[in-house]
Amino acid sequence: MRTVIEPSHEVPVINDVDIVVVGGGCTGVFAAIRAARLGAKVAIVEATGAFGGVATNGFVCVWHTLCDTTLNRQIISGLTEETIERLKLIPHGIRINLPKDEEKHIFRKTTYANYHLNTEEMKIEFDKMIMEDGVIPYLHTMYTAPYVVEGKLCGIFVQQRSGKGVILARQFIDASADGYLGADMGMEVYRHETLQPATSAARVYGWDKLKDPLNILKNNREYIGCRPGWQDELADIPQILNWFKSNVMEDCSIGDCLTKAEITGRAQTRRMLEVLRENDPGAENLALIGLSSAIGVRETRQLRCSYQFTADDLCYGRHFDDAVVYCAYPMDTHHPHKNTAYRYLDGTEEIVEAGKENRLARWREADEYPTYWQLPYRSMLPQNIPNLLICGRAIDADKGAFAAARVMISLNQTGEAAGVAAYEALTSDSTVQNIDFTSMRQKMKNGGSIIL
Ligand SMILES: Cc1cc2nc3c(=O)[nH]c(=O)nc-3n(C[C@H](O)[C@H](O)[C@H](O)COP(=O)(O)OP(=O)(O)OC[C@H]3O[C@@H](n4cnc5c(N)ncnc54)[C@H](O)[C@@H]3O)c2cc1C
Image (cartoon, rainbow, N blue to C red; front, side, top):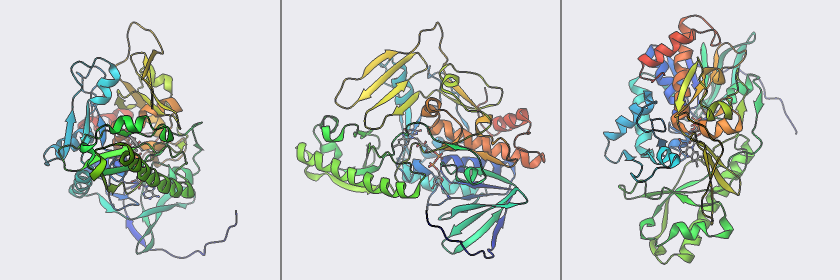
């Protein structure tokens, strides 16, 4: 690769804060708010023009149940529940889906009991929450590099429309999903053997007039694995959200790949609409009215932390003393070009493939099954950087564990834990490795989290 030397120059100090969060997805927003509510001066840096990340800019509007697999015991609260309650107060802000009574299967229960968020209202609500809690927002601001003095992380360089600058801080939270800050600080980066595909989302007018869209798409050989989902989810709103699996297999943490993924994803959306117009007699008025402002990325790379959360930890419901996340969502693996495989806590697994009947099997037999799994703080904790925490998609998890942990009801909690832990390290003059877990978990509980 050809290289040149960038000339060095002075840059302005844009701000000097206690804690800075890189990335304003739900995870980053929740990290910032939790730390700010405890009293820290917090800045959040987001590359796009809105907070929420994949949940808003990517149109991925589903938060799964806050309960364990029995659906009777609530295991998640905190800012996830608070956001749900706030959206309930807004007309068409959220739609709550309960599992059908006749549905006995654990998967149907734990994934069909969910919240469909109005992604646009959520952008506005996140703005409000950020402002109410006194977090200092930086939108259209790209983190570019760490500012390191004598080996110590002291700030982040950012690029704004108006130019470059640095934000100084004492504690840092990497919520960029691709782990940019952690990687730049020398943390080991690894990728799972195969990456789950990225997916473009679209809003389509006229979906409700189509006669048989699901079968037409499902049986279209040209697009094995491409199918729409949740087409009715915002039926209360005169726009229908609808997304297509686009099978974009690029590693979207790499700039050129992300560009290619965006272009490929949009072209696939166009092609899906053509297929519907060619085959569905009700497609006369079918119109594309919105594309997500960024392709939805499921998986890129992970950062090696103090502990790798494993599929066995998850599937067998292993307990951790430093648990900070509780969740019942199953392993949900989208295979490239093939199928989607689910592994549930109750010992069943299911393969969903275009053009085929769903296949059910068992992966284990036991007298008793866990009703939720938990993720330890150690999986977001760098081994030897004293003032940096990782939350969101880049946490340390093997392929199987990541397939479940990647959903928002889980990652949201990593954000909240990071915010509280960074505050704990800041105020106890400690490192993030040496904070008092009991005190940290108590603060999480006091702030509204369920700690089991
Ligand atoms: C198609 C699809 C369907 C999915 N379905 C579901 C589902 O039904 N339910 C569910 O819970 N989850 C689902 N997921 C998974 C879930 O949406 C993601 O795993 C989760 O949103 C990731 O959250 P995050 O905060 O880690 O990352 P993101 O939401 O990606 O947030 C990271 C933020 O960091 C910002 N950023 C990155 N780099 C920089 C930088 N250098 N400077 C400044 N800012 C930066 C980005 O702009 C972004 O806003 C789905 C994902 C996809 C793609």
